[in-house]
Image 1 (tube, rainbow, N blue to C red):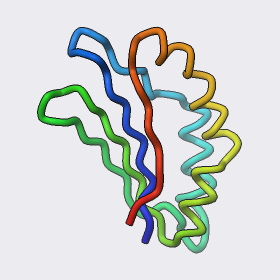
Image 2: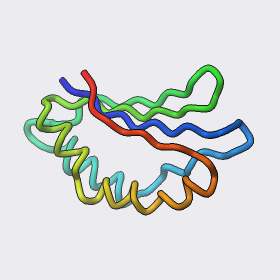
Image 3: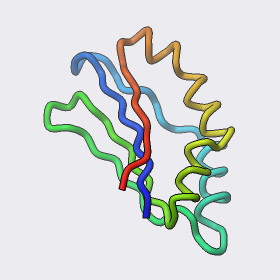
Image 4: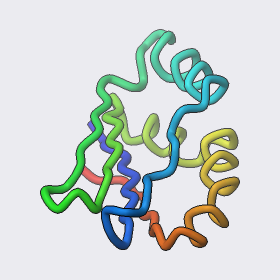
Length: 100
């Protein structure tokens, strides 16, 4: 299994995290990665650090190839890219990557 994580770190607690709700993107993820045979996306979690500054979204995939597909999915990448200026303006940094 492979995990794809996206972490958002804000400069302080007065800065709001980016709204992560996007119905079209959620439907795409469900259809493409969860309602398929064999299933590609097997678990999801959201965690916040003890200091409340870092929000981490983790997606666990059945295979390395599934995780790579998700990390390069055009709709996922476009959604992330569309929020770059908003993140920069608020001082929030974003890191993403694959891990075991």
